[in-house]
Image (cartoon, rainbow, N blue to C red; front, side, top):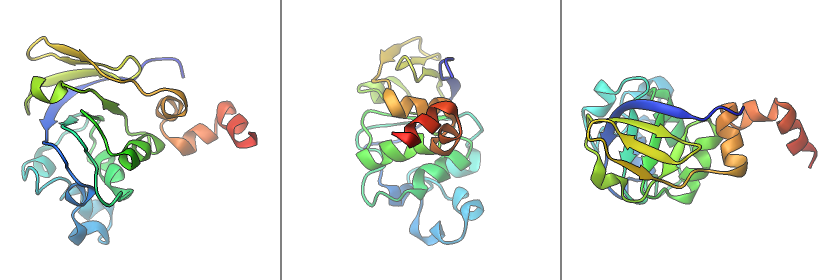
Length: 172
């Protein structure tokens, strides 16, 4: 549980104020994860659900995951194979839901202007560092700490609770 969470992938850039309803369109929520994954973020970028690859990284502006707090939204993103989501700022509900399912999230103010879709980026979640490998620029974000980081290291809340550290949490 001590190795850093370092991910590298192609960037998919999205704008500001992306609501959970846009991440997981209402018409597909009740059709199951398999169908929902085919439509994740399609209203923001129709190419995303067709071309996203395992390990790709979403970069967004301010207030990613705002609105309804639909808990299925981070699960649907993770089901696409996305390795991490980096935003200038997340809605608080989305920010809590991601680590619970083992989806790495990182807040990095200023990153939105430093990347474009298709750039290759590397992110060190524990250190909070994002590197744009295409341009050579990097930025310091706000690394998660405490329980959020423990959940990410374990792969989510349920896997964490199965560890010795999780058993201690349950007793507290």
